Amino acid sequence: MKSSRKYFFSKADTVFTNLRQAKLFLLFTVFFVSVLGSLNAQTPVKLSVTGTVQDSIGNGLQGVTVSEKGTRNATTTATDGSFSIKVANNRSVLVFSSVGYEGSQQVVGTNTVMTVSLKSSNADLGEVVVIGFGTRKKESLTGAI
Image (tube, rainbow, N blue to C red; front, side):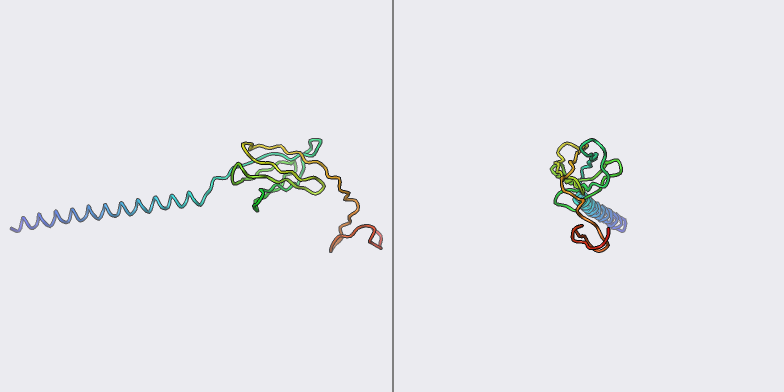
């Protein structure tokens, strides 16, 4: 009799161990799938757009602000007019702006390499003088400049 009880308990222990392993495996699988799903949701794929900004005669423009419309995502152009920015998707609109030039907007679309030409604005900046605490027109100043 002792031998049959011994066999019965050892067989029950084996079934219990297999059941415990199955539960742990199932729990681990559910956890792993949920972690992968949340990582995918947190890291959206961004589209990289590069290019150059030029003036009307083809010289690269330094310091032009390149921003994604409707977001705070922005960069400025390098000394040769080149830029690189990551945007949300191909429907994003890039806004190009600089002092002394008319702004421009371009839809990214399938164009991941852009060449943008800005036209010089006709606003007369010679009438404005920058001083330490604000700006005034030349005609309103009484001192020597």
